[in-house]
Image (cartoon, rainbow, N blue to C red):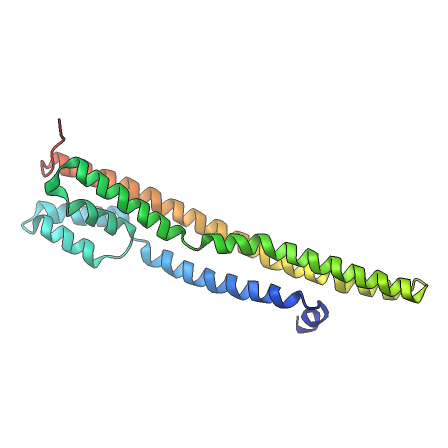
Amino acid sequence: MVYYFNKGGFIMKPLLILLIIGIAFGIVKFWILLRSSINKKKFTKKILDSISSEKGLDGAIAICEKTRGPIAAVFHAGLIRVGKGLDAVERAIENTAAIEMSFLEKGMVWLSTIISVAPMLGFLGTVQGMIVAFDQIAKAGDIIPSDVAGGISIALLTTFFGLFIAIPMQIIYNYFVGKVDKTVIDMEDSANVLVENLLEMNIIKKEE
């Protein structure tokens, strides 16, 4: 790999930088999504059980404060505004959900950029290499098949490495998009369950 990297020319360096950035971002994003993931059913039950017990709302709010993730943040935003009525609770949940969703999607544009730029850089390196190869042929005034094949092979290395970077990054990107979408759906579903149960318990009332 080192041999082919050196043969690929100067375009290989920015491609390597893109690869390092993509890997680093992937690790950080995976860790963030892992930390934000919780069992929504268990957590929702835990909150509702706390509200129904002697601990009440204060106990549920304390649980939310000790729990990481968007679902806990949405629950916390709603519970602390229970005294202000249903509209205030729903607005707080919607606003917090929007903030949490933007946090989950933060930085995804960089991964998308790497997926787009890496193949284009690779193709640019190939075009540059082909220009150099044909210039050498023109100067030599003769076509030597082995030299032409060797030059073209080296020129294609950048395209290979560009695709080598973009393909796994696309898979990682799709995985992250799926995880974010699932988290958003879980967040919305859990928030609806919470509001419905608060109404049933008469902790908050619908405004007429």
